[in-house]
Image (cartoon, rainbow, N blue to C red; front, top):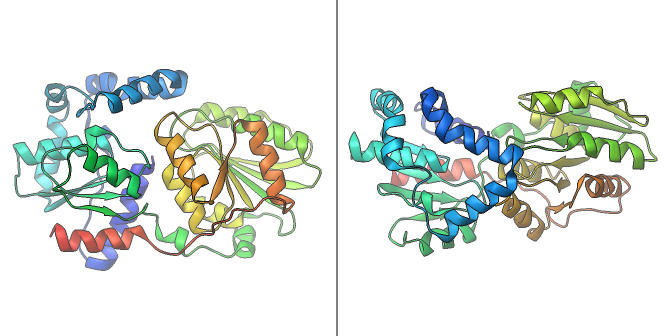
Length: 352
């Protein structure tokens, strides 16, 4: 998940810059089964099997200014063990990288430690009212638009800092293309299309690969990363493209290496993935966005000239071929700036 990865990027920078420890907690791991069943499972089922229902729910949360993702009473009941875990750590600061985590951090501050400082880190280019929680001391956001949303929902008195999206150091200090290809065992001459499924919702990578294989008239290497989507990985492994040299991968920690080796990326538009690709000046084609958050992330990247949004897998394949032929290039290139270090500096000033 992007929120855990982004939190890891900030923790990496925190340790390097302060010499102090940072503990990352995946809240879901501490939820009892009954709470996962009513809080987590419906969300995953909606985005995988009925994204239109998720769209209606998300739009309703925005329209009706819902300040909670679940009943506060149920949240308190379902997070008792997690709150105890946090309490044993006795943190001075909490960085909440997901909206539910922000609600939990606020609950912890109210019930167990009123002195703890909370920074809420929003990664997506679309926020929602449930981020507005009592006890949050600072917001770290990716864009002016998200900052404006928070102020509209009443956070005029709380510091809001536009910092971008934090990424790990290996994306900012990437290998050269030649070195990355050698390490991956890839041909240095043939162009490479990297396809990534992302962490949320279904991605039609198999369809995009079929379209790319059908269209391409040049020898192309394709790398498809399915992540934790085992059903997708099984479909990818059954493909037998005629023109593509296809490599399929499940979960990997070497995304930065594959990005360094690639000439173009086709991906679901998670904000973190888009920022990682931009840092490496990798032309990026987004497709199959989830309603709400991913749609706005894709639109933001198009507005910045950093990539394109395809309407379907066929259009994504056509765009990728155009990039490989030199007929399509982004108007914005990457930068080596890091939100991670900026966030650490703000935490040191405001939350220590």
